[in-house]
Every structure is written in C-alpha cells, then in structure tokens.
Amino acid sequence: MLPSNPYCDLHIHVGASVAPHIMWSIAHQQGFKLPVNNYWEFVDLITAKPGKVKSLDEYLAILHEWTEKIQSSPAALERAVYEIIGKEYRSSRVEKIELRFNPMKRNQEGKRDLDHIIHAALRGMDRVILEYQVEAGLILCLAREFPVEVNEIILEKAIKYRDRGVVGIDLAGTETNAIELTDSVTKYAALFQTARDAGLGTTVHTGETTATSGEGVIAVMKHLKPDRIGHGVRAAYNEDATKMLADTGTVLEICPTSNLNTRAVRHLEEFKYILGTFQDAGVLFTINTDGTYLCETNIQREYSLMTDSGILDHEAAERARMLAFEASFIP
Ligand SMILES: [Zn+2]
Image 1 (cartoon, rainbow, N blue to C red):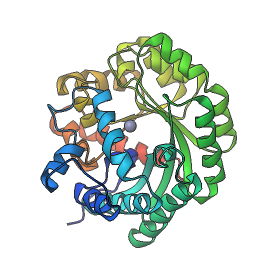
Image 2: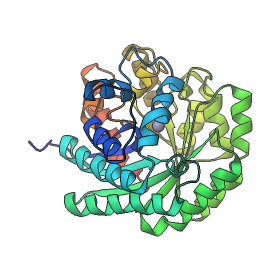
Image 3: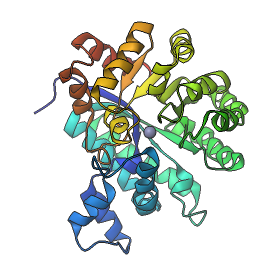
Image 4: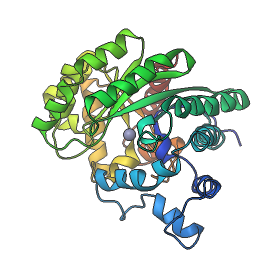
C-alpha cells in the first residue's frame, strides 16, 4: 500500500542502510571470508541492536569493521546505492533522498581508484532514479580522524562531480572533548568556504555525544557555517548554541533512534525535552534515519516514534517533514 505522505531523508549513511540480505549477497559475490556460520549470525554482526551498542564509537566500529569493507569496490557500492534508494521508496515512500558515504573508506586504502568508486555510486543512483522517479543526491563525508590533506581530496572530488549528482559535503566522526573539537573544526574553515563557493551544500556531524554540551555545535557554526547540522541534540543544553541555531536558521538533521541507540539521548522523555527546547527557541529541525538497517528503522517509523510518544504533535511533525524537502541540497 502506498503510504499517504511522501518523505525526504536528508541524513542516511550508505554504510548503515543496506538490507542484510543484500550485504550478504554482496559479500559472497566478492568472496569475502566472514566470521560467521550462517546468515542470521551475519545479521547480528551488522546491526546495532539495543543493548549491543552502548556508544557512538561502538556504533561506528560496526560500520568500520564490516559494512564499509564489504562495500569497498565499485560493483559493491553501485549495488548498495541502488538497493537503498529503491527500498526506502518502496517501504516508506521516500521521494527525495540524500545518501552519504566516505569514498576514502571504500577504496581499500588507495587500492581502488576513487573516481571509479564515485562513478559507481552515481551509476547506482542514476539507475534507481529512473526506475522509481525519485530525487536523489550524494553527500561525500569527510572524516574528523583523517588528515586535512586527505579530506581536501574528498572535497576536490565533490566539486568535480557536483554537476553529476554530488550535492554536498559532510564532516563526520566522534567529538571527544570541547578543546579538541574546536581545534579540529578550525582546520576546516577554508575547506568549507571552498565547498560553499563551489555551490555545494554543507553539513557537519556535531552535538551527537554527551562528551560536550553544545560547544561543538557553537564551534561548528562559528568556523564552518554549515547549512545544516547532523544531530546537534546537545545544543538543547546550551542557550548560546540554541540561540545561534535559531538566529542563523541552521537546519538540524535529527535522527531519533540512532541517538537512542548510541545513548546520546537516554530515553524518549529526554527527546521530548530536547525537541521541546528547540521548538520554543525557533530552531529548525527535520527527522531522518541515519541508518535504516543499522538502527532497524525507516523514516515513517521515526516520525511515528515522535508523534506516538507525544514528542511532536501533528503540526510539528508536518513542519519537520515539509522542511526536509526545502532544506535539501538537491537542486
Ligand atoms: Zn550520521
């Protein structure tokens, strides 16, 4: 049955959103040696079941250890992108989607050619757009843990493929403490300016762990001035951060289940406080999945989670749903 409303997902990672049976198939196609005895053990290996994952680092470890490795070939990435976009349309009527990944984490430390990897992702996207008539774009993720020069190469590629379907860049990775993160952020001011000048959309993962109380969000807004922020939930605990978000009209990409799984937000009651604070302060936010299979969710479920638990009323949920379409980097 066709869901009544179309959705737009602005924050969804390739490494966290391929169905396990597709990953299983890709792994076998490439002759991967897997540390499991059967399919079900594999499912367990690549999902972040509640109770299994206790932090963002543990969550990222699953991506790093398995899914990114299995997706590290042009053929694997083409299929991954193709399968995700089709499945999100079929299951939740996601008609607009910005899929993100780090191409440097798909090239086996330089053994695969980066252009081949990006072309493959674009091929998968082209095919699925034609089949389902959806709008889609790719966001290339830079990594906090990479040297600046490596991230510069990713930006170069994003600019090179801007007219082919790469719509923006992201800076991802764990924030450890306030000083470190201000430091890591200032290094990227020029790079983000270059991205903006080239017409790319910009977003940054920040305020996603309890290690900071919104200082990361402030540092990011001050130095990188992104159009959007991935998560940013910790900004609700910092008046300056909340005010800056509202004043600049920076759009938050909220990913409820992901934050609950990584313990960035302890429970739904805390989410109610966070989104209530944002609403009162006039902070713009959207609802997204982060990773549909890693988090065992889809975008309809994320909205239902927010409305059924009384965190968002119908109007607020509708505002978030419509805003996602408007805040998209897809021209
Ligand atoms: Zn994310």
